[in-house]
Length: 373
Image: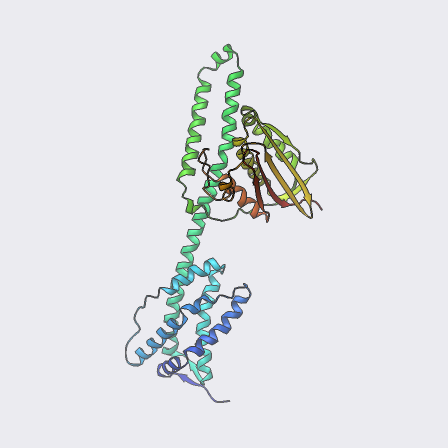
């Protein structure tokens, strides 16, 4: 076995100039193994790897001629950091991709019986470290942006879902006021006026938050359900009692046809949000009509259905009802309710569908994991 020599800058500059494709090929082999565990075949760094290897070669040749390396602004490394964030890598794997380029340089030098040490190693590390720094900085910035988007989305969704119980509370206050005799109203003084004014103020604040949340911040970040097995009928029954002031005011008959012992394995609070939004949507289009909730279990999946005999959905809107900010010009709303439904159902691994005939109501169905053993 031949003895290896210390790799001078001059040696490495010559090898780098002659063996760029070999260096890149070596890196590809190492990086392919790294990314295989992620089922990721896109070796995105390859897009700018030739430029990075070429720049290292320029540094080596310049140092040999007495010129120190100068700062080189590489626009590709930040782009690579952003792409790898969206590819699902963690920051350690992004760094590892670049570190494997060091290994590739060393491997190729050793094939020429040379050790990479001293100034030769320093120059390689200087340029690769710079690329790592830019990629990691952009990766971290993308993480911060994604977290901000998720927080904005959560705020918009939570605030949106406050409107239904707030509306029910307002109607309860109206019913209570209408049911009191003149003496009781006199004893109450301006209590109902103050209460109504404050409820209206809260409603205005909620609407302002929803309207001021930009559509771009409402991205497809799925909710994270905390699953447990529970009976569905009591959950729906409790929600219908809470929404009774709304259904009563609009003369809507409601049927809960869910089998009493049917169970699902899901996040109960999120499932409540799904039914709340579907029922709220049905109530708007079914004044004086009937809304029925049902469910059945088959092959480990529970299909839940909310159907009404209201005005239905126009054909041109049917394909977009679950899109964020998709609204009916004839109805007040922020266009988030059905988008929330879709997000929650898909976070449980389910699917949501809608069928409708104008003038003959709408049928919304969604699937959840069954709670049956």
